Length: 506
Image (cartoon, rainbow, N blue to C red; front, side):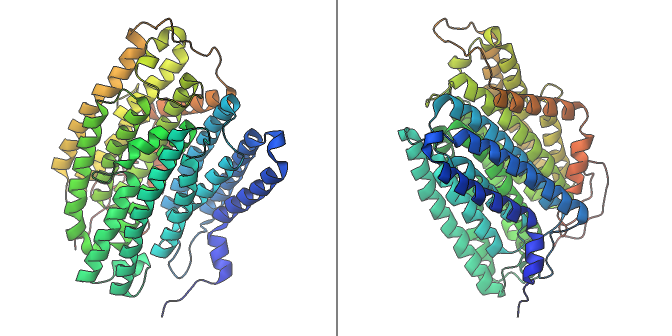
């Protein structure tokens, strides 16, 4: 019979999440009491930033003390959990700052939007902490329900409502696959804890459950062929919410996938490894090929995000401590670049609900050189360009290292990754060339000022990317500390250069 952690231990292990949820509920009550008369949305967003900061302090405190474990194995307290939590908090803080700017220009959002962002964040943090499929599913649904509403939070936009409905219908379908997969795994093992799944013999029922889990996971990260919702939802959702989804939802989903694969699905690695290999290859290639034809920048970034999901699946396939460290570094760089890019798009669009095209950015360097420079650095970071692309180069480098030094070197997939990255230069460099080389149309006005919140996001994103591009050691140490406790070791170097041996593959 399964043993459960006592309530006190569970509360201690979930202290950062409880801090965040309590703050979100208090903020919900105060914003409701304030009413629409005082236009509390921006004030609510700024209080939400304070709650995010307090949660970050709780995460650091728990990491230093070594809290977060439960004796029954349902919650983790390893470095991977805390490192991912800090990246999620960074992404949420940036998205809230971009949202503050958008609300100041449009007054289009209700006061509950920042609260929903905090509730979605709490679900993401629970997903990151879970070592039990039911805990994971609870966090996933808490995140998903909030995101469905956030995608349609601009009540004056039909495109926003359409994006919300599409995401709800397809998300519910994917959640059904996950739940059925969990039910089959429970039927095969009699437990939903990852430790029990990792020690089981892979029966036919077990393998069927794994297959259904993979379908649900592939949808959540937008992997091909389950990616078709991504461009429509990214394009229709308000830009601050798209930034939040691109940075945080992807981070939480990949953290969940890596932990489930590393700790729970080892017995079935011979079955799921080839499937995920083809998913990764198809996602990298198709994401980049379709992005080449996208004049709409939000749709282009959506397909770019699909391609990046393929790159991250390579880290999942490496199946080692080094892959966990590489993923932490990659997600940090991706979050910074995403926030910077969407901060620029929010200023260029002036909060108007409509597509921003490459033509809208033509000649941006001649009228707003700062905005053009920020967007160029972020796009080069997505590309993985050295120096000018900052940390984006090392992000891909660490993934390549993890893939080449895994127990089964992924040489062919590494070649596909490199060629796909070269292909992505076609749309990243085209956008940069339009900003710097094309003349600015006289009928395209440009705002003369940059709001403080968006300016802060762009400054932090670009400075962090560029500094980590020449001195990656601080983030590399964070990534090396962010390992999964029960993941296999690897033969190669982690971001800090340490090595370890690899057990024989089962």
